[in-house]
Image 1: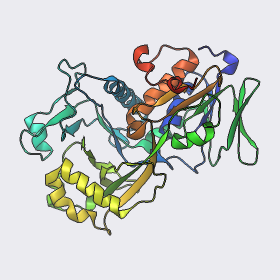
Image 2: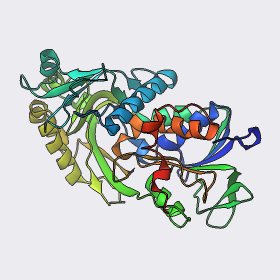
Image 3: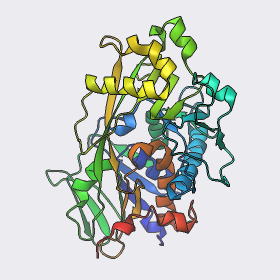
Image 4: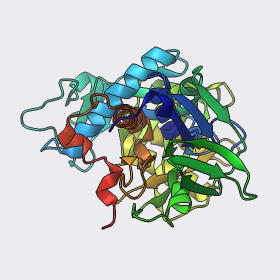
Length: 384
């Protein structure tokens, strides 16, 4: 897929993890990129998650999702190392996966040297009983998504316009035009990348050839300040993040600044509302009791209404849990691309998807083997 020098301009709708990653990947290849977002500033949507994990998925047969997330996590960690401040914005801590249901077994012949059975000392450090089923991911850690988004948008080839609500997109004379509800033109470019999570559906569903089955997924995390913990609670905190049935992270700055602890998230399908709900705090407390029973036992008081805080956001999923990336339908919708559907794996996959989109548009070598890249291609949903 070629792009001539005078067409190296793109519009990106959405300034979250997906949109900022696409914009950055294009900008560092010399493209001029205009990013439009309806929010007032960075992190208003799902990318405002206070803290999350970049950690691989593993499976006994090292399936497609496992191979793609492994490549995605590596891309994210490399991007974080380049753009972010270690210890404040992110940290390569390693992640222990408490394998509660026994589904995340390693392949008989592991291809990932960075994932292995957790050692007795790692299991003990997490506060789990001896011989608890657990994996250790060395190439994994926590990231504050908002900081990654802001850093990716700070490129001289990127212009961001906030408070721009896109109402319609149209293509005329090999140029995509984006307008608001009053018909005012917000931007024009030969290439348009829609990266606005579930809201992408409203913009695209009327177009010929579009059949990407996007679904909303609400998630809420619960968190509190480290300074509010008792000495006993501090002593029971694992020295690294733990995931499995949700994830637990501590020692990471909260949105207000002080260091905090975080547990979550909930998963509520087909829900487009994002108010913080106390019943979801209760669900996250239950999640902690499965993930880290010993810690949950001493943390009960931290979930009281006057102590616990929350954040909720709307993510976007696809039936096979793999994103839809790149050109949607080159014949009927030339120049129109998508980068969405990452579900709860936006931290692990958005950078890779941005690189994949930019590679397709810039006619570069792909960051994945073609046999894997095809599983992410938005074209796989093109209607006949």
